[in-house]
Image (cartoon, rainbow, N blue to C red; front, side, top):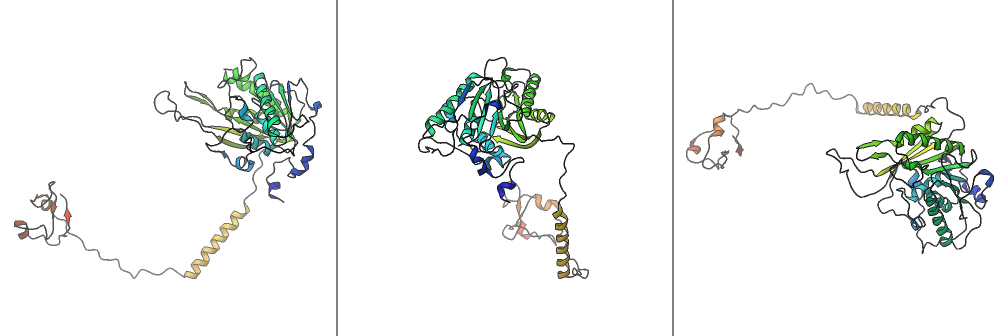
Length: 404
């Protein structure tokens, strides 16, 4: 079995080349309902990148997806076409694109219920996935449409015809999609009212009460579970909710795990996304200061086809017992080669002569030839006059310096 087949997620075929025929397949409208607010073009295979004119960055998913800590360095930048329009987000599009590539196959559907500026839609277009991006904010949809339009009009030599990237204005708590139609879900959820994306009352970012926010977020998670196919995966980008003035941290990522597990989705993987920002400590109050938040979480959940009745224990480690036996045999062989340990009972301990302790007055008497602090120098070169005629006590050790 090939290495990529062993590392493939459950429910996915490792033969990626078999999915290339689905690249130009148009989006099936019966799989969704509701009114389409915006429709953008996709990017089929075969087009030529103009790398000399536009710097696009497609990060290897092995660099991002197979390490529990994601750190692209301070030099990582936002590539084209994500930089044609600004939208408040901290997640680099390269990181989202790596999870899009890892959780889906070419030609499959990827749904983003909190689309924002359309980062997932653009990354799906670059990686030949079909996507449905939904957001309640019309300004966010306009930003996403601008990014996709710049990508199709400038990056490729000719504009493709199939409509494979759809932008829909809608609510994540009532997705206009049929059940079990999504092959993967990749999204960046709002962080309560830390960042307000719009003034709409139905926007989750305008909910000030944290418990109410979690309740509404749970409704959105119900919709995610409904549209996701069995044995497929959800990647959620989330950061903890910090209340700076109150010096409190609400573990939003832990609450997201609880809400998803409460709905039958299993936590499959957990990553820490490290981003860079200025500053070092919170300037509120006295010590201990609160550190700046410079990381987010990427939570990957799995939707099982049947609910589990209990935990599946790992198989016993078979090599552990064999390794212990091997080490025991190696120790026995070394002892046999070396023979019995030598008998040292006939050896006598070394005789250490006992030194006589000099009286305290011998060192406390100051001398003109000594130092200013009263430390007297003892030795032939230092003894003169009356001191030279004074014999040392028997058994005394002649040192170079003696203190008081």
